[in-house]
Image 1 (cartoon, one colour):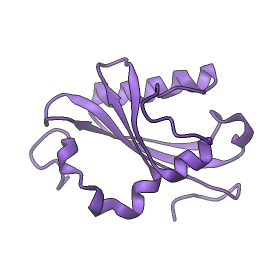
Image 2 (cartoon, rainbow, N blue to C red; image 1 turned 90 degrees about the vertical axis):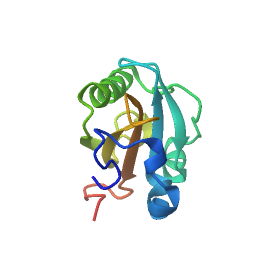
Image 3 (tube, rainbow, N blue to C red; image 1 turned 180 degrees about the horizontal axis):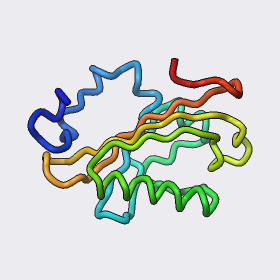
Image 4 (cartoon, rainbow, N blue to C red; image 1 turned 60 degrees about the horizontal axis):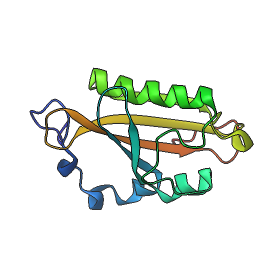
Length: 137
C-alpha cells in the first residue's frame, strides 16, 4: 500500500528494483495492451528462466504452454486487469510437463505505466524443488 499511495494501483515507477533485490530472481512482469491481451513478457527472473529452460522476454505470456495452461495464464492476467486487484495461486506446475510434479506459489499484482489504467502485471513465483512442501517459508 505504501507504494501505491492514494492511487488505485502502483505505477511501474513506484517499484524500485533495488528495494526488492532478493526477490528479482523470482519476478516476472507482463505488458498488457488491453484487457484480454495480448500479454507480452517484459521481464523474467533468473530462477524462472532456469525452471522453464529459456528466457521468454519479449514473447507471448503463453509461449510454450499446453493449451489448458495457456488458457489459465490468459484468464489470470485478464482477471488482474479487470479487477485491478492482486491474485494468488498455488498448485502443481502443470504448464511445464516435465516438471509438473513441482509445487509453486505465485502472486500477480496490477501495475500501471502512469498510475492510471492497468498496463502491466508484476508477478512473483516460487518453485519447490522437493515435492510436497510449501515454497514460501
